[in-house]
Length: 375
Image 1: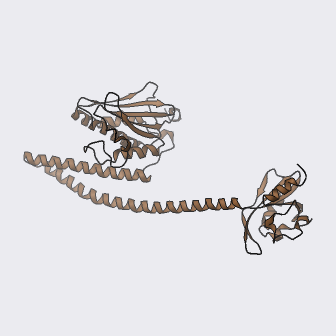
Image 2: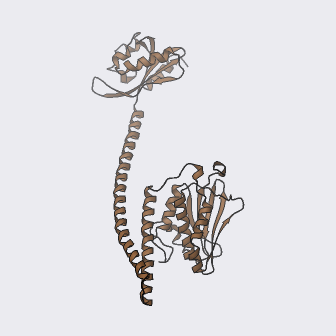
Image 3: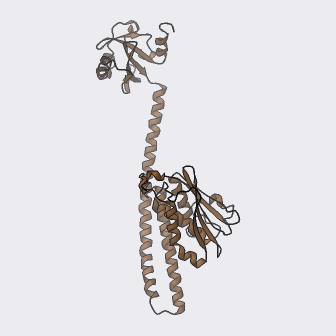
């Protein structure tokens, strides 16, 4: 490359090149960028002595650091922060300075930021807008959370009173018809309590107010154990409907299926899916909870032998207030809760027909290696 071409290229990139003569004394190398007009002396391009700190006051302190940098003969470069320089006509320049060593020469580069600064400003502006939006959303969410808790409190108080009253009535000497009505009332109260729980759990999951994943592998939930515990808790309901339930681990699946998630929410997911499977199972049917490892994840299925979910409902099944084809369900929030919980943990969830009849719900979670947790 011919002498001077390199300097000319830098000049066209809006970079002023100064070579150090001594402390606070420099001379220009190459051409003078257009932005220097009105700031540098007219003969700056050929000047053998120039004090840039007298022209750019910002450099007074930066050059002190640069002197130490050059004295140490340090590799790399030393950069200043961005500063704004006002030209005589009132226009502003956004500049940065860089101190470096090139071929044993102590060089000071002063660069004007044009498009780069505009792009940086756009990024900062977008960041500020996103921060303001987040703050507004947090404030709105806080208001909704307070309102929801007030509503739930107002609902739960009278419900507790109703439940207590029905329990007292049940212990009284009632007629057969009266006892039947009390039993119906207690069932309705339980359904209302479950609806309140679904609303609160779903809202917390949406806003991230529930517990986050504990990064300590020692606290990772065992999905297989959670499934067994939930199945055991539902055994009376299975017995009433004359339905069987079992947990299957495919060959190669560890006994302890440690997954990324939170134990309480995982148990609720199993409770929702197993209860749904039980609800739509025929008498003497079978509900199967199966585990199959797939690389670094585990695929968990909950399937029944019922009539199956109508195909037109499956795409909307995990949305709010969607039920599986009948009014026998609860609030229509259970599957929605399952979806947002699994997705927050980095997994996926879905539904498909079961070969031979029935429905198969599945979800996939990331495995945590058992070697990372205590034996």
